[in-house]
Image (cartoon, rainbow, N blue to C red):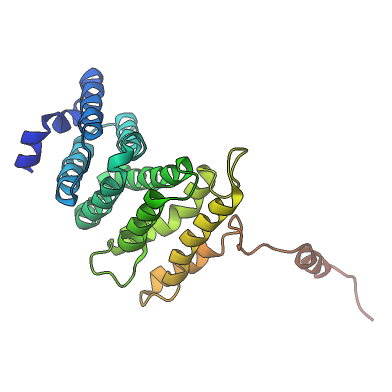
Length: 245
């Protein structure tokens, strides 16, 4: 970690109680990433190790929430580094997840939600198709959803992703699009996300199987399970019908 801080001394200031210093540090981090034409995997992991500890040291809910959002936004703001940043994030968070204590867990749960949403936003801004979109899907497939990958995320982190993925797809308009969207690539992208979760329904881990099955059947998804009007009518017919002879 000392080497990473020596190269990027502004990281430690992200946890400062001085708002102005935090803002300046974030701007320096953005400038650093924008200046890079590439970000090797080792550098991305060193960077996220520093960012992880910056959030770890950040006190009070509002600064924590702001920093989590700002760190996730880096993926969108620095598109040339987005894929290695995403890969570095999942690798570092999975490694650190078992050591996060209960008092600090909420801010890291939020960070995961924000980073996942940022990955969806990256796809949306690329109109749901293209090499970068496929590479980002590959990061999620390999590091968040692949049950057979020994380097995949830890169990608790995977369960959290299964809890939030549909919420964030809906929030980022992946499920209904907008006037600027081409529905076909968007729907294809959503299907690819669904295929990742579908594969986990055969996981050897019961909690993963159950969580994957539950989220895959979410009625907000194009293939989700929806109750029919007939079923509701049948339920109503089961009420009081008087005394039979």
